[in-house]
Image 1 (cartoon, helix red, strand yellow):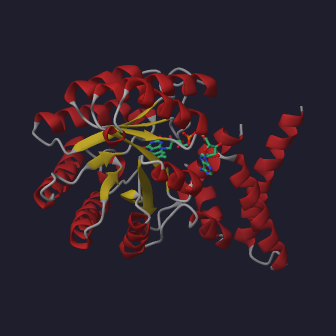
Image 2 (cartoon, helix red, strand yellow; image 1 turned 60 degrees about the vertical axis):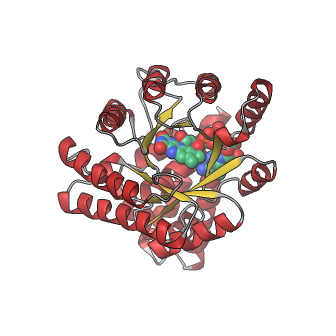
Length: 340
Ligand SMILES: Cc1cc2nc3c(=O)[nH]c(=O)nc-3n(C[C@H](O)[C@H](O)[C@H](O)COP(=O)(O)OP(=O)(O)OC[C@H]3O[C@@H](n4cnc5c(N)ncnc54)[C@H](O)[C@@H]3O)c2cc1C
């Protein structure tokens, strides 16, 4: 219920206006976002590299509706790749197909992605090309994203991979399609609101599917990305690779910037490869709402902070007051329903 409400709010322009205007929202978002600029992101990446963690940089933005904006996003992706090489960072790139124009025109989006992949290939150091991952958005884009990776591979761009979401019923088949190519897969549970016809309504089914798909991916020999903060799943991965004699170099754990830093460090200390997903930019609203949806405690904390800030201000700022009310309302509704 809370998850559904927050994921709905993530697509609402009114909620966006209200919530982004509350200063506390921005400061809360900055727990999960490295900053507004590429320089902020590069500083965060350097600090993570210094802690022996690798990075995937992501310029926030999605559902872009104009060609100019999509072209600018591709320009930024190229700038990120150039900065990674210039600064000698242990980092790669994550991009969202709808940020590069998938909603506008598929051929145009593909041209933008090819431009990014071409530059990533040119600038790759002696160890190979810079890797670019297409993040997975809602199920409305799954087939197009998987097919895009297949086309790009057929055209010789093999420095591209994607993300598969265990919550989707189709993911077992998509995993086989990606493994048939040899494309790298990041396995996640899935962060979008989906109908029961395409996704498991029950989290336990998603978790079960995740473990099954994770084993298939780890055994396949392609470099796997196990992206989760779930202790039970991480333990299952460790046990599985130990039992099967799979080398720690053959896969990596991935986690989000600002989430479970303790676990990131611990896994690295145990000798596992760990990559942190580092988003930056000022289009953080939908990203923040998805992070809130993943953990009710985040919402309660944020609603409380907004309410305190509004009270201290004598609720003079209408946007802040509405923001507090909105979040507090969601939390109250959920609590009441739980009691029932
Ligand atoms: C590197 C990376 C890339 C991702 N890319 C995509 C993508 O392209 N497409 C997509 O749909 N999804 C993506 N996701 C999000 C993913 O789908 C899940 O929504 C998210 O990872 C939460 O699920 P979980 O596996 O951590 O397990 P959960 O069962 O949701 O959480 C397990 C535990 O992790 C902690 N935790 C989880 N989320 C948070 C949070 N937001 N704040 C604080 N603690 C938290 C809590 O302790 C929680 O109990 C990505 C996730 C990661 C780590």
